[in-house]
Structure formats: structure tokens, C-alpha cells
Image (tube, rainbow, N blue to C red; front, side):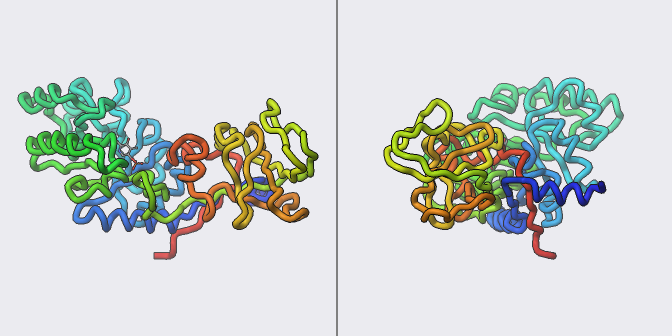
Length: 377
Ligand SMILES: *Cc1c(COP(=O)(O)O)cnc(C)c1O
């Protein structure tokens, strides 16, 4: 059997369809580029492009003009490298780990240096190789997660020899509360970033994630780092989402039944029918990235009709109350919507007590993944 036939069979065999609209992804990228101009927009493609498939997402963004790609782990950079042309820059947010320096230099990957020890290792690597190596330097401006603390930044500025062999391409920091525009931490971080920036006046500044781009011009810097907004997630909390949806998730019905009042439903019998109900079991569960916290709380949609989840989410299936639909409406193999026009990422995340990021990065591997191509350019 050849590969094409195998993938055709797999696409027919899957009980769920995850559609990833690369045209919408590119439209979102272009919108973010307009907002960040005259600065540029990078793309954050960590965690397999937020679960959507970095092998498809990164080349689509490259074709749309993106040249800067941020990942979290060095292994992600190593795996991304073959998917991008040589003029794309790959940066590693989590920093430079001991033992990876020469691989990083060999592959032309740009580490984000998060401590004086990392600066020292990168400088030693450059000197040993007799070359100049590029880096980004991250300052911690108030999140206490990654980056040089104020005292370390002071030492670096007082002792520039520590940067020997390193060309600092980018100075960066990350916002802790960007999605809450009124939070006082934003202005405090901006002021600290301004101080660091003033000491590296000729270096490009990277400050904003998706939310930061929408905080206003002061926050944008030279190279924004959007992630969630590219993938259609709302960049800020509250109402309204200016981004185009990228993801659609539909799951197939594998059984329907009618149960009398008093029937116990699902593991732990956590739901008991109060009256006669029609039920449909659909073919996805927590192993497919639909959180168990949706038990007795979330819903699916069939057309405009909301179908509540009843009982616990199982590993491979979920039971829906389909009483609102006329008998016989749902048949074996029919698809219901979990993410789409009736139920946004934010809605399903709220029902699961989590955020859109966690829903996206948990999306399962058992779906038939369909990529809609960007419009011919
Ligand atoms: C994940 C991440 C981003 C992207 O954040 P979004 O909120 O998804 O836009 C940007 N910068 C850093 C340092 C990150 O860790």
C-alpha cells in the first residue's frame, strides 16, 4: 500500500475533523504586522505552533513574510530548522542550556540569554570558535520567570567585556499582565524596560506578546512576539476578539439512545436523568484534548442547537444531551461542533475552567487534520 492511499484511509477513518485555516492564520499575521508597523512581527511557534502543527504553520508564515520565529525549547528549534529557509531566524526563549552551545552555534539558532552564566557560556563558545555569535538578551522587568535580574543587568552594563564575541541582536522582556490593560504591572514593566533599553540604545527591542500589541504604541517595540492572536485566540480578556478564527473542531456521533427518567449516565453515575432524555455519544474525550473539567459543564453544537455534556468526559468519548433535537435528527457519523462559529475557543476554555492556550496546545493527535491553504499569493 502506498503512502497516499494510507493517508486517504486515515482521513476517512478518523471520527473527528480538526480544520486549521492557514489563510486565516496569514490574515491574522498581516493584521498584527499592520498594528506593529513600523516595527515587525515575529511569530511564536512554540509547542508545535500552539498545537496546530509547526511544520505547516511556520512555512505559511514564512511565505507571508515572517522571518523571526520564537520557540521555547532548543529541541523545538532543532526540529523547526529544516522547515524554514536559511534567512529565517529561530530564537529559543527558555535560554541556552549547558551542552547545547555548539549545536546552537552550528545550526545558526539564536539563544535568548537569560542570565550572566548563559552570557558567559555563549561568549566562551564564540571565542573558542573564533567568531561572533548572535543572541537576544532578556531582562526580567517584573515577571520573575526568565531573564536577567536588575542587578545582573547592571553588572553586564558595567562590564561590557562579558559580551565579548556576542552580537546582541535583540533586547527583550515579557509582560505578565498584558491581557489586562488596566493592570498596574504593565506600566511598571514598561518603565523598567525603558531603563534597560536606554542602555542598549542601538539594539532592537522586543517586548509585546499578542496582548501587548493591543496595549498601545508604547508597548510595541521593534519586534513583537505574538502567539495566541495568530492562532485566532482573543489577545485580551473581556469582550470582543479582533482576530479571525483559525481552528474548527467537529466530532462524529458513534451512538445514540433514549433513556428513561432515573438512568445513570457515564462514569461515577455523576448525572442522573430527571426525565426521559435522548443521548448521543461522540468520539472524542480527554485523550483528544477535551478536558475532563467539561464533565457536566460544557457543550457541543449541532447547527444552532446547544447540546450539553452530561456525565463525565471519558478518555475517548463524551455523552451529549440531544433532547433539544427532534428524534432521529442525529445519525451515526453525523458531526457536532466543539470549536467553531457557535462555540469559540474562549467559550470552551471557560467551560473547562482554563484558557484558550491550554485548549489549543492539548488538541489531540487522533483527529483528521485538514489544512486550508493560504490564498495563492
Ligand atoms: C509564549 C510567549 C509569547 C507569546 O505569547 P502570546 O500571549 O501567545 O502572544 C511571547 N513571548 C514570550 C516570552 C512567551 O513565552
